[in-house]
Amino acid sequence: MSLTTTAGADGHDVAHEPVFVGEARARLDQLFTRYPTKQACLLPALWMVQEARGWISEPAIGEVAEVLGLTPAYVKGVVTFYTMYHTHPVGRHFIQVCTTSPCGLCGAEDTLRALLQATGCGDLGATSPDGRFTVVEVECLGACGFPTPILVDDADFIESVTPEKIPEILARYP
Image (cartoon, rainbow, N blue to C red):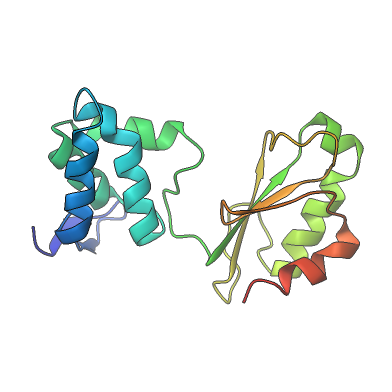
C-alpha cells in the first residue's frame, strides 16, 4: 500500500499513509494467528491505527476494512460505538475526567471546569490551542472511593483530583 488520497467529510482531499505496512503488518499478521477470524482482530487493529496516528480517520477506516475483509460501514460502526477511539485529531495528552454521580457529588464538575480553563481547551473534546491537551468527560473510571479521578494518555491514573491540584498535574505533561 502507498499514500492514498480520499475525500474527507468536508469534501476536501485527505492524504492517508497506510498503517499496515512493514512491522505493523507483521504485528497484525501475528494477531491473525491468535484469533479465530480476521474480523475478531478489529479492535486490536483499530488500536494499532490509533497508536500510530493518534486518531482514526475515514481513510484509516477504509484501510482497516480492507485488511480485515470487512466493509468500511461496519468498521465505522465499531469506531463510533466505542468512546475510546478518537474520530478526530486530539492533543498530545488526552485527559479523561470521571463525572458520574459519586464523583459529581465530590466536585467533579469544578475539577472539570478548572481543567478546561487551565489547559485552554475551553470545551469538552476540543484541543488546546498549543496542541497539548484534549479533555473529555467519561462515565466511570472505576475509582469511586477516590473522587475525582482522571486518566491521562491511557497510562496515568490519578485519584482525588481537585481544582487546586490541576496546575501541578498539568506541569508533568509537556
